[in-house]
Length: 281
Ligand code: AMP
Image (cartoon, rainbow, N blue to C red; front, side, top):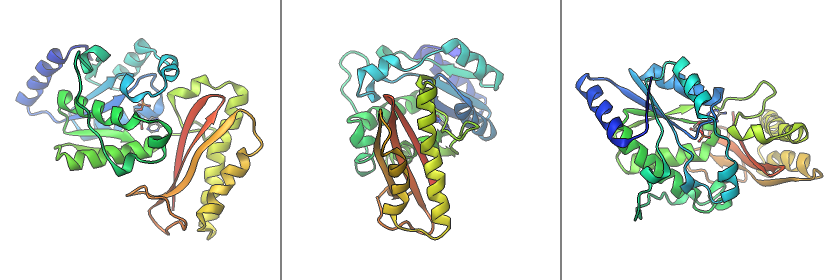
């Protein structure tokens, strides 16, 4: 496995793959890898000859400097996991390489970024869409894999790729959960036992709501009320948003559609932002 920390070195490797007619798939990450990330690597492996993973904690997508500083990092461990999974190259850029002196070019997507993570974290999606564009330009993959864990981000990247006519297939990776049902996240390491117990109410509430949906409930108010009720009297937790949306437009709906609806939520538990979502089907 090649570990590459310069754009020039990656470009040279990429050219050799072009000469050899290789298909390339790409998985962008911020590191501190878990099985959720590795499940995306498996999808990439099935799609291509060469899988490239990037590890980059992108400062441009953090609106809160404390969150950026406390984001967990363990690159040596990550590299070992990726090597064991058959990845051929890992790209490790630095902020200085990605946003050189005088950088002033940004990529933005309008409506899809307006709500949810977009309103809770101003500037977040501009950082995401810009870094993904930069990485796409450097890696030049035929496909790239994004997790449904960050469902809004996935839709934003799909929209951007289509709008900019980028010749890249965006592949979706299903949300991977821990055995107890909590959505896997690099941030889970910051949860102590008490916080973890509270966090589990997120996925339990979503599955309870899906059960209600399957039993015929269609009122968004009632479906989202299950999670709100579960968090009502808990200290040190904030429900940032809980909503039922149409999966394609991410438009909030009052009545869940029979097909193509999804619940999205972010709850802050003991200062840790936890995202989860579940298709209503
Ligand atoms: P991150 O390192 O958090 O930026 O995530 C990198 C990629 O992994 C993104 O496409 C995420 O959506 C995806 N991802 C993170 N956690 C999970 C998970 N639990 N299941 C599936 N994909 C995930």
